[in-house]
Image 1: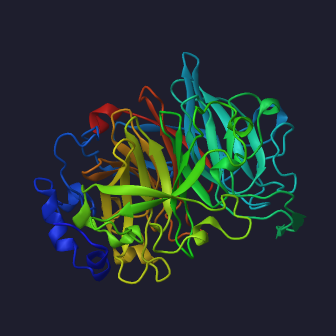
Image 2: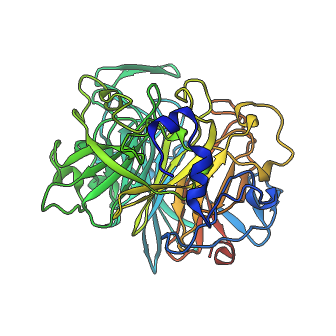
Length: 506
């Protein structure tokens, strides 16, 4: 059966589409103890997704009240906002830990680069302006990145500032050459005034860019925006192994955000020092169009449901007219008929064959176009060679996701709001929840079930913005699979989790 735009918008496509995944139908009858509230399908051979995954043992509460883990697993605190020290008298570890990547590994240990997502004076512990790291002097006590070194087991050795004077550094991506691309999830013009916690100031530079953070000391960084990648409310990105394409997500609404591809100019292969390598208009920035069988463009990812799990859709791309958004934001430069939108395009992570992309949730009246379906999360796989995109994980909507209140009785069996994503050394996924109530780190098998790895016990959150809310962020594995690093955003804590990972993720 083919799918037309008319069928998607009228809701008549879903029943028939499930039949096109013969032999890989959604296993909606799977027991809740295994599927944990997630619709999933069983893929056939040759789908390109590695890893089988196994259920983790039940989570056990931590007597220290920090992190519930399965039996056989343990954690170390690597950094903690306002408590652990940075090198060279730079002060205490900044707050609001977010996107994180392991960018280096050798016999001496690991190198990690970490975002701190803040606006000016959002916390006492903003990223300090250290010589050689400052982008915008007007963004005082705000966002940026720190560089952290540990031993091979995740014990902290040192930490220092990699970039400062940026705003709302949310996620980003590890580069093939061993640096970190950090993304500003904001859109602020130079000259905009700010006021917070008794302080006032004015941004001196535009914000909404990607920056490269190096593993060198603070004095030898490159705090210069990569304007070629566009100015919008960035979330995360992935560099294709061919060093010619970069894929970028946008976490925005009103209208919903887009997913982008940047293509390098002919003869250019990306390398360290992108802000100096690329001119402001280098290459081509394009927005994604998911194509239905009749050639029409899917207007929003929320029109697809679990019935389309495992079904590849062709992707085409449309060039962005004004990537620096001088007169209007990029996502408003297109009509709904020209692009495929999505509420909360979030985590992105590259493999050799493609990249995984997360849509966190969509259930509010302003989140969904008319006729679309509420959901609590989607994970996609974009195939670089085939230029197709496939829904591989789908979290059906649970009404409890919209409310606050008591901690749910089956907290470790109901998941919502996937956000940051990483691919494990065995090909399975680890997701960080940004939902309501219980907050989890999840093991997710593309095309299969999802299991809880950890639960945040510092706070049992309710909803985004509430004082007791705190999401998990920045999951990233050491290359040898020994250590999973993950953050609790507020209060900012980085944790190194060790245990028999291969037994459950391999």
